[in-house]
Image 1 (cartoon, one colour):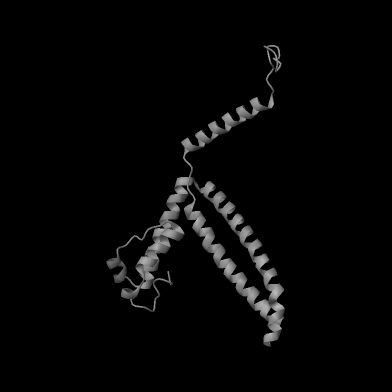
Image 2: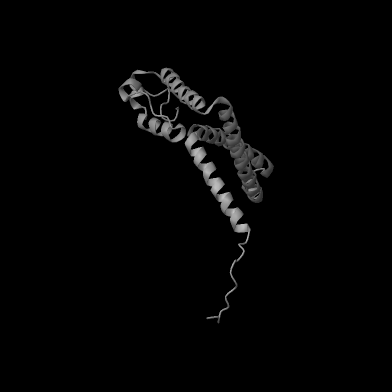
Length: 181
């Protein structure tokens, strides 16, 4: 929000188009107000309006999926993203450790540089995690009951095919040789 509508800039100069694109890209939520209505609001009013719209979209998704299913999905999404980003962070820290000794040539303490850059990388990772978790929670869609039934039918058919393929068929007639008439 602050990137597109800074509180210290007049509302006429706000990047409303960028705000709308950002909301759709990150949260799959459209901007509820027209440009003329947004310009009439101050920063705090706009923030409250956007928070209420986002909260409403989240509540709708939670009602659609059910509270227990939503908590389960949130847990799975969080664990996947944290795991993935933590691995990337550890790899990046290893890469930084390889080249940190060169900082000594620039009259900087390599240990202090490693600590400072490592902390910066960690805070950036935490911010990316928060953003990714929210993005995926808002993007997840409920699977309709009909789609679930269709998936079960496909699984049953596939299991039947596998059962048939594992048991060889017995030949009822005599074997025909390659030179037999």
